[in-house]
Image 1 (tube, helix red, strand yellow):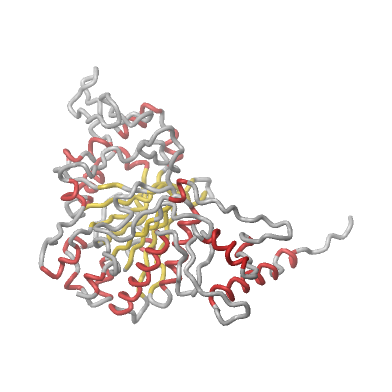
Image 2: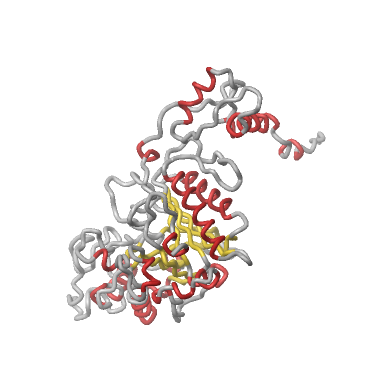
Amino acid sequence: MAHRPDRAHLRHRPDHRQQDRQDRLTRVTENPSAPNPVPHVEISRRSLLGTVGAAGATGIALGAVGGALVTGGGEPAVSDSAPGALGATGVAFHGDRQAGILTPVQAKGHLLAFDLVPGAGRREAAALLRRWSATAGRLMAGEPSDTAGGHDTGIALDAGPSSLTVTFGFGHSFFDRTGLADRRPAQLKALPEFSADRIDKARSNGDLWVQIGADDALVAFHALRALQQDAAEAARVRWQMNGFNRSPGATARPMTARNLMGQVDGTKNPKPSDADFDQRIFVPDAGPGPAAHAWMGGGSYAVVRRIRMMLDDWEKLGLDHQERVIGRRKSDGAPLTGGTETTEPNLTTLGPDGRPVIPANAHARISAPEQNGGAAMLRRPFSYHDGIDVDGTPDAGLLFVCWQADPQHGFVPVQRKLDRGDALSAFIRHESSGLYAVPRGPRHGEYVGQRLLES
């Protein structure tokens, strides 16, 4: 057999052309005193391509990170067209509410928790939230980041904002770490343990919580990377979870999302048009409790749970059995008592056998607000799939995120009831948990949490 030389060194050989291109880009954008200087300007991802032509007229050879703007040597050139409708959609960072609560669910999501490093306190936390808010504002507007690393990574260089949202919250431990225990709201007390929980503490809680959502995976990862760099020496990632939803436009008409069990998931979500929507989802502007807690006025509380689905067991059930576990038809999400997805279930209807058509332990019955003193939550989850275990079992399920004005009267009583008798419990396992206070949105010139950290 002919000798085949080891080519590993070729696979790992540095790409000097790539480095040369990066060096030229760095000189042009970061060092105005370098040869052939040009004025430093902030270039948005959307306007960058139009800027290249003007730069070329000055005799500057612009190379691109990853070869995106290369014009010779047979390498592809970037189109000068604007992003498509999906990529061009932006969400405002500033406003009465933080983005990512009322925003329609996006196709890609990242959930992270950070812990402040030893020795970091209120001052360091304030500086971090100031950096994070500035970066989130730029990225959500489709602008490049300006991270602690000193330059944008170029990951989303040719994309629009793609409905990017970044949401920030504070965990129970944050207030002790920053000397603000007297400003921790009573609603933020630790969630109780439920009998069916199998909680991994390393993937639960945390000082700071970040939710990232976008309709493009690279845009979402770009934000994730920028915020991690911004954390610098102030905070370290405690845990990270990655999720997804159906992409916009994948169905003939807008529909409630399905989860990995194939069920329509989120039918009973409260709607902003409901008369009591704000009362259920957002803390009153004045804030309940003492004045020291008023910083949460206009905010909301997020419960985050990683719920693994026993898909192999679930998929062995017949369709009729699956529908009785949920209490709804799998085809369209309508209650078993008839109608459409939005039809109110008739919990008193009996079948020919004299039993309730919607079984007593059906998930839809037990979780119904009318069965829980009117308790309601705005569910905004992502599905996840973290690979296949050695026994062939998929590690997949739901990154459950729900929003409410008071989790002690929203999530907790409903979960207690589900814990006692939900037929779905045999097919799911809660593996991580967190509760976070999410303050109102920042005004222009403010950063998220400023009312807490500077009051």
